[in-house]
Every structure is written in C-alpha cells, then in structure tokens.
Image 1 (cartoon, helix red, strand yellow):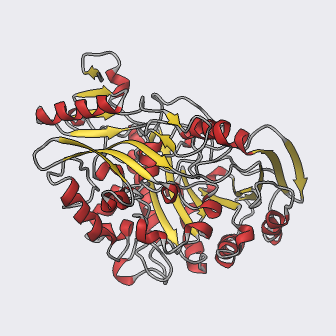
Image 2: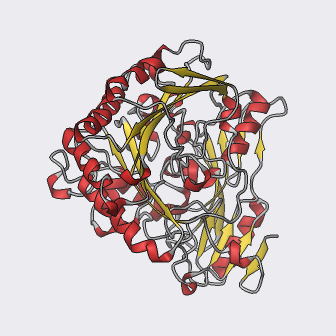
Image 3: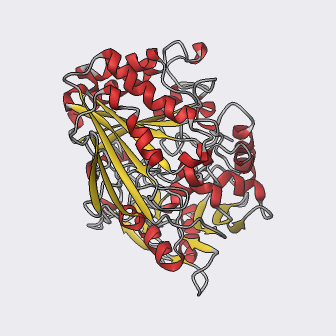
Length: 517
C-alpha cells in the first residue's frame, strides 16, 4: 500500500516540491497529497484510487523536472515512484537487466558494474533517476560512443488508463504495442502513463578507464576575435569528426559563462573504444587545437559541481580527486577508473535545489562568426549574470538515422547540444535571471543562419535541429510551432498524437508541454 503524505503531515513541506524551487509557483498550485509507491502493484492501486476520486495524477521519480509539470497540480496527487528503485538481472548477472524508474543513475552504474561489468549509456548526475531520464531519451559522456539511453531499451512496463477510466498494466516492446514502445523511447512517459520498469536485453561493456582534461581561458584578456576562434575551433572539431569512429570515445563540454566569473573553459572526457586510455592521441589532438587560443594553466570552473545539479541528462560528474594527474602543456589531465568517475557525486535524493531556469538547442554545424559574436556580446553584459551555457559534444553513435524510425528522438544529425542554465536563491532575482537568459537565447538564434520565419529559436534547418524535451522550456509555448522545435518537422509529432489518443484517450497524463490530442 502506498504511503500517503498530505498537507497535515510534517513531511509534506519537502514532499510536495521538486528540485527547482520556483515551483509550485504558489501555495494554491500545490498538490493536495503525495503518495509514495513501493511496488508496481502499489502504483496501480494508487493511480486507480486517484482517478476514482476525480483527481489529477502526476508522476515523479526524482523531482528533477525543469518546469512545473509535476508539482504544479492544484489539490491533485503526486504519485512518487522513487522507492521503485530495484535493479535486477538473471542470477548469473546477465541480461535482461530490469531497472525501475526510481533507481538513481549513480546506483545503476555501480550495480551493473558489479553484476556484469556493463554500463547504461546515460547521464552523469548521480541523483537523476531512470524514470524521466530514459523515457525522455537520456544521454551523457558515452553518447558519441554508444548512443543515447533509449536506443538500448528492449521493453517497458507501464500503467495506462483506458477509455473506461481503468488502469491497464502493459508490457510493451517491438512486438506488443509497438507504437507505444516507440513513443516511450524518447517521447517521455509523462505523456502516456506511469512507467514501473525498463528492460535492457543487452548493454555495452563498461569502460575500464577514463581520462579527464581541462582547458581554461581568462575573460580579462579575452577579445572578440579570440572568443570567435575558441568557439569555432571547438565546433569544427565535432563537425569534422562526427563520423570518425576512433574519436567517438571523446566527449567535450565547452562551459560558457558571464564575464564576471573571470574565466571559462572546456572539459574533455576520453576513453578509447576498447575501454582503456592507453592511446591518448585523440585526446591530445583535440587539446592541441586550442593552443593558439592562449589557454591558461589554471583549470576552468567545474560546472559539474553540486550547485549546478541538472535534470534529464544532468551532469553532476566532478573531476575525481583520484588516480593520476599529469600536466600536458597548459592542460590538467586526470586518469581514473570509469566506475570511480561515474560513481562520484552526491547520493542524496531528497530536498535541496535552488531556483532555476533552462533552455536548449541542437546544432548541426559549427558556430559561425555571427553566432560567436552574439554570445560574446551577451556574456559580456551584466544582464546575463549567473548564466552558464554548456555546449556538449553530440553526434557519433547518436546520429544513426535508423534510430529516428524506432525511437521518439528525431535529432539524429547534430554535432553539439547546448543547455542554458541559471541558478539562484532569492525570489527577487527571478525577473533579472529569466530576462538575461531569454535575451541571450533570442540573440543567439537571430543571426544569419537562423530560420527567418522562426527567428529567436533554433528551428530545424541546415544549421539547427531544435530543442531537447528532457530540457523542457515553457517559454517555447509562445510559439505555435513549439512541437516542431522538440519533435522535428517530420511525422514524429503526429505519430505521438496518435499514440496519445489510443493509449490515453482522456488525457489523464498531461502538463503544459504534453503531447496534444
């Protein structure tokens, strides 16, 4: 039986909130109760009771949702599945591997490593859980080498609600409700039902070692020309090496921030396809390209630290203070075992967080001079105080066009993925932080390469490939074409609408950016 925490329970103060302290926006928007489910059967019973009571259910596995989709539920019920966190396999440790939605990524990596020396190619925030992460796509340091998380799914257990208002447990795969299975591989479980388990018949071997390197640049001596060179050098590397398989074990993050921070930089994470770091030629070639950009010896700020917790594909992986550290030119390189690096971070999953806002964009090509100068201008302004733009490498194994046909991730041509982040504590800072991010975003996508009829957004064209729904951004609702930003301009969104009509005919599972019937 689910444990119910209502407004009279002292735990409610923590239980009804997520990580983003901006939500619920007001007391009147808060849910009336939270129900902690321990088993799939608990979840089914709780969901049916909520429906019979005429309440709106929202589902939470970790509370990392960027927007208000879960906790803004006036007098409704949050069905919390964080206690459904089991990770199982066959007795001998082989697949299929079953992962429940409440399992934290850090625990998943450790468990799979101990059972079978395999890895789930997922994100790097310890406390993000499988529920939203996997069903929304999921990607991280191994994306270029192994693809995104949902590419490896074999089946999913989900509770749907039929036309009669009855909870219907399903196990979906390529042969059973294949339409729903595809929709749940990137189209988010929050659109269609309550997921109780993910299954993976096979998973790739865990890397043995990881080498991390960092480069830092001083804002005080930065010029527009050098800033342009840094961004174009970074972007051109991923554009030129998208199909070069020997480089797929390299993952880069260019962390751009406001000038007031003093410096910005690049973090690189590398393992060879064989899981070792015996040959560092790919990594050193990447680092060498930035020597003419005048890096400084000091390491860049670690934007993977606990105060920049991220959802969906959250990146909380810190440079581990373990293994061997070496100097390579102006770079700091640290070697560790993969499992030590993947397991670093804070294992707490309750409470905490700050006020935050996020945006995203996929890029098919390197930065143009105009784009780089737009970033330089905005990040040099006081208006973008506190803004961080993480420019992640993409491409490689993620860009398999066949996977666009059996998953709900249409972005299979990009070389970089950008995430805009800002974190603060005081309500009084809301207006300034939100405006600074919005103005920077608009400027970045209003250059010559932007689609003229969709200026201010990375609308899909030869240069951009839209946005990532695991980084939801309710600002995009002001555009009638917001579904195309997240699901592409092809037939994916109409397909998802058809699945929604079939498997959630009463639109039980809905939020501000859910699939429209």
